[in-house]
Image (cartoon, rainbow, N blue to C red; front, side, top):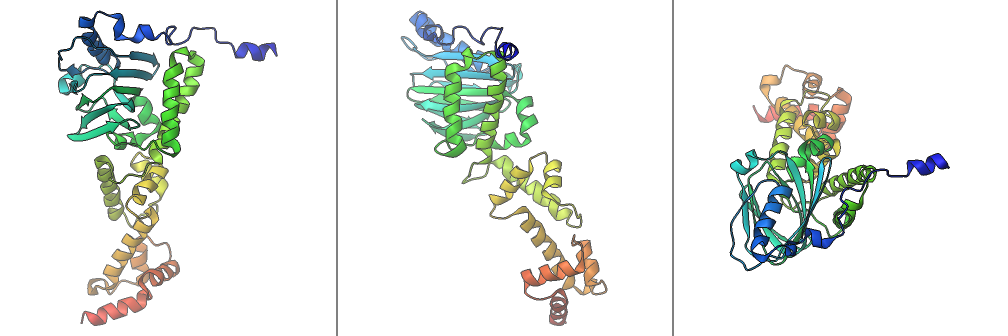
Length: 339
C-alpha cells in the first residue's frame, strides 16, 4: 500500500503556479497606453511571429494566458476591439523557431482567417486548424475569445501522417467527437497550468487522440484541396498498377503515408469504395481488350490475369454479375459487332 501511495505522488511543481490568478494574465495590470503593444507581444510569443497593424485606442483590455509542456502549447486570448489585422508571410515564418499545427476554437465572438487565399469566417463554436508554415492572415471580429492548442509538426505527423489535409477546414463541434473535443479543450485550458508533468503527458496524449478522432469522423461538403490532390494521386497509381495483385488498403495506405481508415474515408467521400474502384477499373480494362481484335489471340484467362484477377473462374463470375453476360459471350458479341 505504501508503494502504491508513493507512486501517486507528484514531487515536482505544476506546469504554471499562477494559472488561476486572472490578474496575472490580463492587460489591465498595465497602463492603458501599453496594453495594445503588450497584447501584440503576447501574440508573437504564443503564436509565433506576426506582423500586426497598429491601432489607435485609449486602452486595450484583454485576457492573454499561455502554458507550454513539451510539444504542446495552450493559449487563451481575447480581444474586445474589431478589425485588428495580422499576417504571417515568408519573412515572419522564416523567423520562427518551431513548426506548429494550431487547433483554434472560438469560444465567443468572431474572427476571419485567410489561409491559402481562402477566407474562413469563424463564429462562436467554430473549430479550425492552421499551420504555422503556411502564409495566413487574421482579422478580429466582435468580442473575440479563442482557445488554441498547438502541437509540433513532428509529433502530429508521426501519429497522423494525413494531418496536412485538414488545415483550414472548419470542423463540426455540434455532435460526436467534435463536441467532446471542444468541451475537453475548454476544460484543459481551465486546468492546464495546475497539471503536474506526469499528469500532463497522459492527458495531452489523450487530447491528441480525441482530436484525431474528430478529424476522422468529419463529413465534409467540400473536400480539402490537398485531399483532392491526394485522391487523384492514389487513383492514378491504381490505374497504372491494376495488374498488381496487392492493391490492398494496407499496401496503398503505406505507400501514400496515410492510415487505412483514412484511405477508405477518401473514397467514401466520392461515393465509392476502394475495392469497388479497383474492381471497376480492372473490368474496364478487361472489357476493352475482350472487345478488341488486337487482343483476339489472347485467351480470356490471360487477359484476366494481366489485369489483376487471380483465377478465371472468379473472373467469369464477377464479370457476369457486373456486366450481365459471361466474358466469352461479351467477346463474341463485341467482335461480331465490330465486323
